[in-house]
Length: 594
Ligand SMILES: Nc1ncnc2c1ncn2[C@@H]1O[C@H](COP(=O)(O)OP(=O)(O)OP(=O)(O)O)[C@@H](O)[C@H]1O
Image: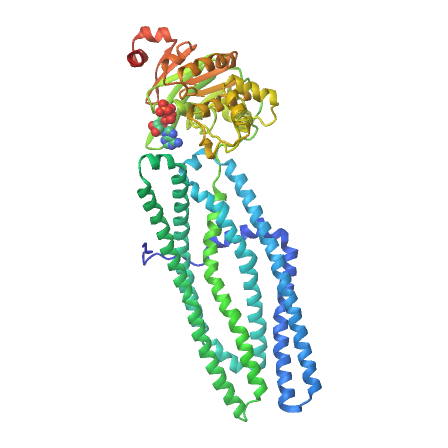
C-alpha cells in the first residue's frame, strides 16, 4: 500500500483550478447559459417551496393549537400538496436539462480531445502510456460529465435550499439560529481536512488506474509472447499489483470521505439538542415571543437545512476529485504539437526533385545524439538504398523525411524546397511508405488495402492486390475480418498488404523500410518485379538488411552510428573493400552455407 508522504499537501482551489474551471465554462458550458439560467430559476422555485412549506406548516399548527378550524386546516393541506407538486415537477425538469447539457459537454470535450490527439506529434505517443490516453478519453470525461450534470446541479439546489431556509429561520428566530452556527467552524475544518486528503489520493488513484489500463493493453496485445514465454504468472502478478494499488487508494479516498457523514450527524445532533433545549426554554419563558408551533417549525426547518448541508459537504469532497480529473483532461489539451503547418506553408513542390539532407542534427533524447551534421542526397527519380548495422539510424532518416520528427539543426529539402515550409499533408501525401511496423485494422484485407485511398475504384484495389500477390488470399477469405491488429495473418501476409497499399497510393516518392523482409525468396522475387514497375520514374529510398536485394540500386549509402561512412554503387563499394564489402561478404557466406 502506498502512503502519501505526510508533508505533501495539495492546496485547495489553486490558480490552476480556477483557470481549469474558467476553461470548462467558456469552452463547454457558456453556450448553454440560457438553459442553465432556466435551471437556476427552477432551483430557486424549489428552495422557495421549502420556505413556503415551513410557513404553511407553522400556520397549520397554529390552526390546530389555536382556532381549531377544520376548513382552514384542509386549505393548508391543499396548499402544501400543491407546493410539493410544483417542487416535484422541478425535480423532474432540472435533471432533464442538466443531463442533456452535461452529456453534450462530454461529447464536445471528447470530440476536441480526439481532434487534438490526432494533431499531436508521434513523440507524444512514444512517451505517453496508451492507458492514460484511453482513460482521459473514456472514463475521466464521463466522470466529469456526471459531476457537472448531476453533482453541480444538486449542489446548487442544496445550496439554494440551505440559503433560503436558513434565511427564513434567521428571520423567524436569529438567537436560536445562531446556536446552530456554533458547529460551523468544526464542519469547515472537517471539510478542509477531507478535501485535502481526497485531492492527493485521487491524483494517485488516477495515475494507478492509467498504469493498470496500460498493463491490460500491453498484456492483451502481447499475449503471444506471454504464452510462449510462459509468463502468465508474471503478467497476472503485474495486473494484480496494479489493481490492488487501486483498491488501496480508493479505500483511502472513500474512508476519508466517510468521515464526513458521522461528523455532520454528530454536529446535527448537537444542534438539535441546542434548539430543543434553547427553544423549549424560550417557549416556557415569558421573555420570548415563541410558541409550540414556532419551535416545531424551527426544528423542521433545521432538519430541512441539515440534509442539503450534509450533501453539500459531500459535494465539496467530490469537488476535489473532479478538480483532479479536470486538470488531467486539460493537460492533454495543453500539449502543443510541434509538427504543424508553418505560416505561409505551401502545398506545391517539385516531388520529383532531389531529396537533400544538409548538415542534419537530430537526437531522440538530449543525452543520445544520433545525427550530428549528416549530409546526403537522394537523386530524384532514382533508387537509393540505405544500409548499415542495426540502430545506425536508417529508419530515423525516413522519419525525418516524412516529418514524423523534425530535425534539430540543418535542413531537408525536396526539389530545393525545405520540407518544413510545406504543408504537412502535402509533404506526407508525396510518399508511399512500406514501414516495418505495419498497422492492420480488424477489417477485411480488401478494406485494409483501401484504407490508404478510400476513394480508389474497385479495379484499382484489385490491381494493387494482384501486384502485391495478395489477391488470392482476398478471394479465399472474402470479407472476413483479419482479427485485432491483423492477428489472423502471417508476417508475410501483413507485409503484402502494406505493399499493396503502396501500389494503391502510387505517390511520387517511395519509402521502403525492410519492405520484403518477411517474404520467402520466391514471393520476394515475384513482388520484386512488380516493385520495379512501381519504382519506375519515382524517387525511391530503400532501407534493407538483405544487401542482395539492393545490389542494383543507383546509389547505396552506408551508415554507422548515425554517420555516413560510404556511398556509391554496389560494384564500387565492393571494390573499395570497406564496411559495405565486409557486410556483403558476411551475408553472402551466410547464404552460401544454407
Ligand atoms: N522513438 C524513439 N525514441 C528514442 N530512441 C529511438 C526511437 N527510435 C529509435 N531510437 C534509437 O535511435 C537509434 C536509431 O534507430 P533507427 O530505428 O533509426 O535504427 P535503424 O538503423 O533503422 O535500425 P534497424 O536496422 O534495427 O531497424 C537507435 O539507437 C534506437 O534505439
